[in-house]
Length: 300
Image (cartoon, rainbow, N blue to C red; front, side, top):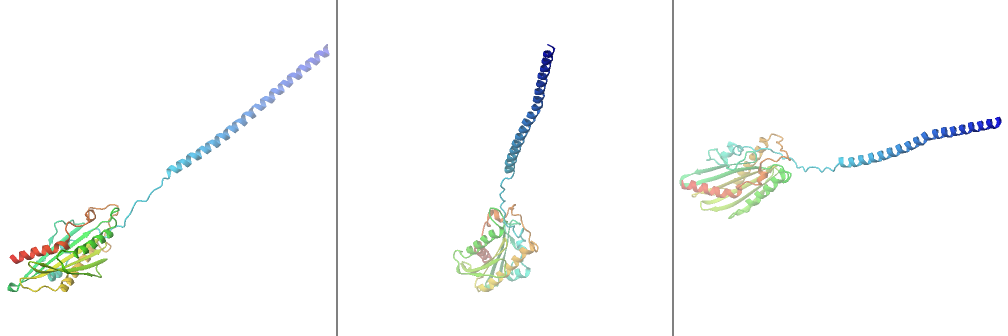
């Protein structure tokens, strides 16, 4: 009985020990499982976060770098202002071309100092019964600003220069029209001369045009012998007109300094570029003005 009791007691202690061992083993296993699960969860979250962060950064990076198109640009105009048209010719030149003008010119009515300017002179040398020598001189300057829609000032000036030359060659009633390229005057220059018969007499018309960078200079010069005076020589008039043209072109450079004054291509000012051309082309109006002046001189 005692042994049986002892065996039972040992058996019970053994069973309790086994149960305790199983409890401890389970207890020890639980943290490992939790840690494994936690590690697996953290690893997944980290990968997901990394993946999501990478995707968000990529998307953000894509949206943060939009394609940028370059703004249109155009070459800046070389000259930013014009000289006083009535002061571009020397006193000597005025004395040779329009000796009876009194040296004071008449400014154009549509002048805009920064973009267009013109001046004209009349001369009537009255020789009494022998007749009179009439001269009319007009200087016109037109400046073009660079503009992103219209193009560079040089290109606009070239287009206007071409029109001026064509207009001078297409005057109604003109006879013996002749175009003569000129050298050493601006970027390009041309002299156009022709005869024009009016009731006052035969007029010898000279229109000389030059482009200097973004400025076009036009000189109209005509002469006539009235009331029996002889008709002036066309070659002499052309030489005089070319001389005036060179002085006017030089005055454009002088007015802007040695290097000129460039204008901003992005900020076109109110200038010839906004209108494209003056309201009246000097080459077309020259003969009409000369005829009217000559008529008035004859009546006086």
